[in-house]
Structures are given as C-alpha cells and as structure tokens.
Amino acid sequence: MKSINRRDFIRLTGTTAATGIAMGFPHIALGATRKVVVVGGGVGGCTAAKYLRKMDPNVDVTLITAEPSYISCFMSNEVLSGDRGLDSITFKYDGLKKYGINVLIDRVIDIDPISKVTTTAGGHTFRFDACIVSPGVDFKWETIDGYDAKTANKIPHAWHAGEQTTLLRKQLEAMPDGGKVVIVAPPNPFKCPPGPYERASQIAMYFKQHKPKSKIVIVDPKFKFSKRNLFFQGWTQLYGYDTPKSMIEWRPEEVVEAVDVKSNTLHLAGKKIKGDVVNIIPAQKAGKIAFVADLVDGDWCPVDKKTFESTKHKGIYVLGDASNASKMPKSAYAANSQAKVAVAAIVSRFNGLETPETTYVNTCYSIVGKEFGISVAAVYELDAEKNMIKSIKGSGGVSPIDASADTRKREVGYAHSWFRNVIGDMLG
Image (cartoon, rainbow, N blue to C red; front, side, top):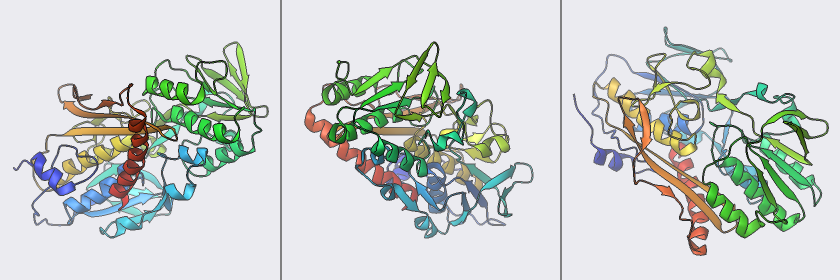
C-alpha cells in the first residue's frame, strides 16, 4: 500500500483547487481496463472526467450529459446586467476529448448499482467499475402554489443558465423605467448561496444606467445570507440602500405561498406584492437521476465525505450540488474540489492504494457593482468520526469590510480570472 503526499498532488495538478491530496499513481497492469461513467456535464462531472484521465490514463472514461454545450450558471448574472452575452458563458465539450474521454450527448435514465450499468434515453448502456454522478439541482415546484415548470416560461427562475437567463434579461429590457422587479430567494440549502443577492446587484447595475427610477425587491424566507454585510455595504454605496430612495429593498423572513402568474402577484401571509418582472428561485433538491438511482435521503445524497462515495450504493460517487457535503456550500468551486477528492479515491481503489487524506476548498466571488467585488474563501477538513466536513479555523474568510476602493476593484478582476480558471480546469 502506498500513500500519496500533498506536495506531489500540487505539483501534478497545478490547478485552481488544490484539495490537499495527491494523484501521482503508478500504473499497474490490470486484467481488464477499468471503466468509469460520469453522469452530468457540469463543473463536478467535467473536472472528475478530466482528472481521471490525467491521473490514470488506463481508465476508460465516458461522460454523459444531456446538453451539447455547458452554460455556466456562475457569471450568468452578468448577462442580466448586460455586461456579457450568453455566448461568453457557453462552452463546448471538445476540450475533454483530447484527454481520450468519450463524451456522449444523451440523458441517463437509470443507474443499476447491482449490475453496474447505466442506461440512457437514447438506448445506450454502459458498464462501469465506478460511476460518478454530478446531476446538479432540481426544483421543489410544490412549495409555491401556482408555480411549476410550465409557468416558469412566464415567470423565470433563471437558476439553470440558458433560455431562462435570456428570458429574464428580455423582461428586464422590456420593463418601463419606474417598474419593479421582485426576486424570490429560496430557503436553505440551495445552489450558490450568494447568487440571489448578486443577481439583485447586477440588475441594479443595469437599472442605475438605463432605468434609474426602477426598484428591486428581494422577498427572502431567511434572515441571514452569505456575505450579507458586504452586500449591504455595496448596496449602500452604490444603490442608496436603507434610504427612501434605495433601488434595492430586502424583505427578510417572508415566505411566498402562492403566485398568480397572470397578474405577476405574489401571495404572502396576509400580504400581496406585484412586480412588473418576477423572478422566483424555487426551493431545491438533488437532480432527478439521483432520485431514480436511489441515491437520496430526503432531498440530498448522503456520501462518505472522505471519498464522496454514496453511503447507499457502493461504487457510485456523488459530487457537487446534489451531495450532502455540509459544511461546504453548493458552489462550482466546491464541486471542483470534491471531484478531485473522488478521483483520488477511485484511482487509489483501482491501483490498490490507500485513500489519501483530504482537504477541500471553496472560493466564491460576487460582483456588486462595476468596480465593487467581494469574495469568500475557506479551506475545509474532514472530521472522520462524524463524517463531517468543517472549515479549518483561521483559513480563508470574507473580503475585509474596510477594504479600499482599489481592493474592491481588483476583486472584480479576480472574479473574472477565477471564472476563466475554473472553466479551463474543467474543460481545457
């Protein structure tokens, strides 16, 4: 048995999310080629597929994803402000093919943990020695009366980037100056904890320049959210927050019970609120295939947090938003980190090695204004006895509340560089 040290991992990966593990594995002659099927073409799935091939070229990797292109949810809020087009966050999977990955555009409809076979809607079947499932999130439509997948074509969620993002942008453009946008934030846990608040900021950026009489109302079931004080600071400096002329109003601890789609009216307990544009971000759960494959307990997938192997079915690993990886947030960078942890575990298993000790990382940027960026970062470790991922005391943190204007401006540049690095690490 051979352990892998941290220095080797950093040397071998040279990437954005050093997970504190190593993947410099000797190549061991096997009786047959090991096969891994990766379900899901987001950050977790693509990163895992790429690093499987990088760390052990003897592994046969098939990545199955339902869409021909990856459209990034992170940075999609900039489409709403007009600072970027949808094409700038849309990427083909061609970069993965140079690593010898078989990329299939299809939808997985079944994963059999006993026979170790995946089946697709197109009639393809793939045997696997390990299966990585990174399906992202689905929505709990039943939580708001009158809101479902069909009505989302009129009142968008825009929480899956693409057509929904374009729809919301067009509605903002068509709205008259002096109109009102209502954003309904979801309850915890959900994908991208600072996302709804960055969205309000990006829409305010657009309004400040083009529709200065307009207003954004955030209806939120929570009282706290990620980077709250930093958002408040940015909103105060840029959008007059907490003044009679504030462009952004945050209404905490208010729960939307129903929506009248025809009139764009939200029903709360004893209250109503109407918007010219309404953006409902529903409560969330693991992606559909996780339920089909019996990988969930409640809304999310329980995993061994040292390996991200499902605690319900051996040989299946669940990454990213769908996994129950608390205290890690449901973010793109967390999925990137988790993918490398899972790859280390799988390749160790295939090559008869001990599973390396692991650490995990997350970084998340939010752009509040043209020159006002903020961030949060953390390094995590495993409490093996409790199967709990917890932040390492003194690691990471949030942007200083007293940061200079130059620092805030630099963080915007860092955010864009971080975006390019994550995309390059998963697809390049």
